[in-house]
Image (tube, rainbow, N blue to C red):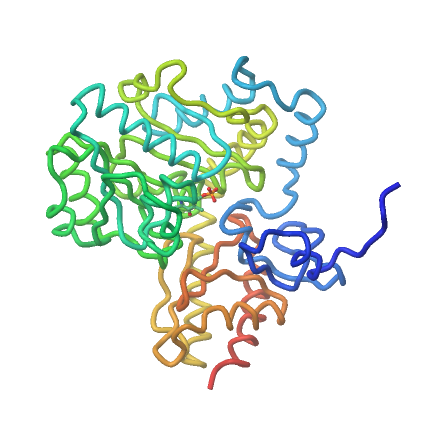
Length: 404
Ligand SMILES: *Cc1c(COP(=O)(O)O)cnc(C)c1O
């Protein structure tokens, strides 16, 4: 018989490794863009599980895919292939530059695969000297040791002993800083086509095109980490589609599963061929359950209605946030693209983003931060306009409690 005990925030401190500091609120159910906690208090969700729940909570198409596949087959391993994985791969290939897909279970794992592929490609095609990886300060690529080292925050990668080598960092939106590092020994540049965790920073046209040209000049692969920007978050299915720049390798996760863990690495046939049988793998990667849900996500997101909806909803956010700012003068800038929006606190509120998040939670709206000075919004891509309006009205109350 199982012992009865209450599941409270205190239990977290008792039984969990202390690497997180979660909110006191424990949500127990969600529907669309609304979530309810243990006390049945209602919240409007502008956090989306960190840009994951791209169709909100319990979207009927995803629940139906989960139930249908859940009663068929969940897992096989890559000793066998399966129908949902092949269907999802076919849809990804048909709607992007890519010819081939590798499935993983998270963003970090997708990036790990991308980096290992780039290194193996360089070794096979150009020899053992071409190992340098260029990435960017403030970039974020996940928490495996390779990806966290490629990420541009020493605070996340220091303190774990010797790091994977030949990884250097340039400055985002500074092409000269890339020129100063790149050479024929550069194997790949890994970049987010809009820095998410690093502060909602869009690339300039000149910069992102310049990075592509530098890769071409030096036979280096361009890897777009679209873990946060992909699956309609910025409007198009993938952010590269609006930039006039095509990467050689693209990684996707977060929104791809709409809440079920899945990741994918997309590339061309010519590059993919270097991950021969046995060179890389994953027990769960491409499992039928996750892929069936991923396919349902793509079916909904890859439509003109949803993609134009993102642009209209983004405009509604920006207009309302500007209106709040006209009253309270708390933001220096509202930036981002599509439904990945950053409200940058002005100089009077430096370091206070978390205070706004906590105050918003009290008023019944879930938000995110991106660093200490930016409040981040990453809601469902199909959030009803009335939920945006009501959620921002609640957010305005939170702002009012903090504005001086
Ligand atoms: C969240 C994120 C990752 C890491 O994804 P996980 O699923 O947590 O491993 C990698 N890159 C970017 C750009 C992200 O936003």
